[in-house]
Image (cartoon, rainbow, N blue to C red; front, side, top):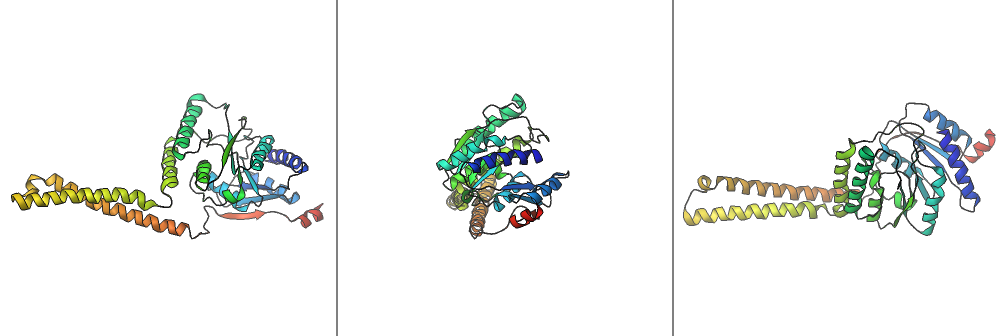
Length: 313
C-alpha cells in the first residue's frame, strides 16, 4: 500500500505541477485483516491530501467503490485497485481524455497476460455480451481502472456487483464514454479471486443490466406486457370453452380439462405479473425520492486538516 501511495503521489504531484488543480487520494479499506489500515492511517497522519475510509466489514468491491465515490470531492474521479495491478503512470492518460470533454474513460487491457482458457476466453465473451446488451461499444468492462466526472459517477446508484456495468449505467444518463489502452502488469501483492465460478453471476448480472437499461423507469411495460398476454390469452380460452358449453351442451371439464386448467393458470399468472409491474412502479417512485441509503457502513474516516499537518512537522 505504501508503494501505491508513493507512486500515485509522484505522478499526481507532477500533474499538478503542469498547471492542473490539486488532488486528493481516497483509500478505502474494505474490511482488511492485515496491517493495511494501520499503514493507511500513518500515511493520512502526515499528508492532508489523503483520506482513509475504513468499512466495518468486507462489503464487496462495488460497495467499496461507492464509498470512495461518495466521499470524493474533486471534479475528476479515478478508480483503481490497490494491488498495483494498475500502473499509476497511466493516470495522465485518463485525465487527458476527461479534459477533452468525455464523462467516462474506461481502461482497456488490450494485451492481457492471463490464462487464455480460464480467463481470457470467458472475459472476452462476457465483454462482448455486455457491449451487445448495453449498447456501449467498449472492450473491457471488467477492469476497475476507470475515470469519471464526479457529477456523473455520484448520480449512479451502485449495489450488488454493478461496478463492472458503470459505463452502461452512465450511458443511460447520457454520458459520453471512451477508452484508453492500459497495461496489465502482474499483481505485486494478493491474488485474484476471479475464475470460472463467476460465469453464472456475470450472466445474471447481464440480464439485470439489460432490464435496468430498458425498463428501469417503466417496469410495468415489461411485466404488464406478459401479464396482459396471459390474461387475454387465458380469457380467450375460457371464453371459447364457455361458448362451446353453451352451444353444444357438452361437459367441458370432461372433454377439455387440460385447456380449462391452462386458461385458469394463464389468467392468474397474468394478474400476478401485472401486480409485480405495479409494485415495480412503486419502487421506481421510491428510487426517485432520493433515498440516502448506502450499500456500506463506514467505521471511521481518517483525514487531518492542513493546519494540523503543519503543526505535526
